Image 1 (tube, rainbow, N blue to C red):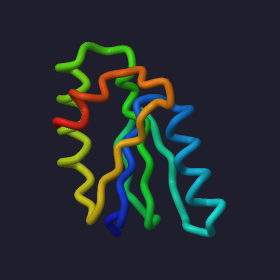
Image 2: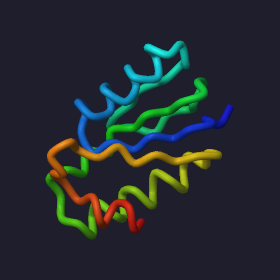
Image 3: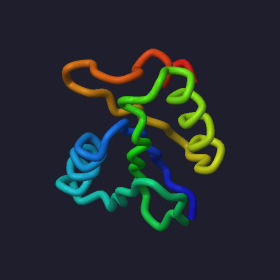
Length: 92
């Protein structure tokens, strides 16, 4: 089963926040980090752990994850204080 929505967060706190927002609305969401998984929920949230890596490395990780998890919709969760490689990850 492919997720309908694939959420990319650059740290675990953001990933958990995104997953909880869907769960509060009764939408099944799975939060993962550090490994590739087989999806089994409508929403898959991945902590890419890219907040503190160089921009090029962050972009490459985003491209790799998107290739592994094709989904109908993709959402990039950004930090509320705009930390991380937001531009590079959105461009990827």
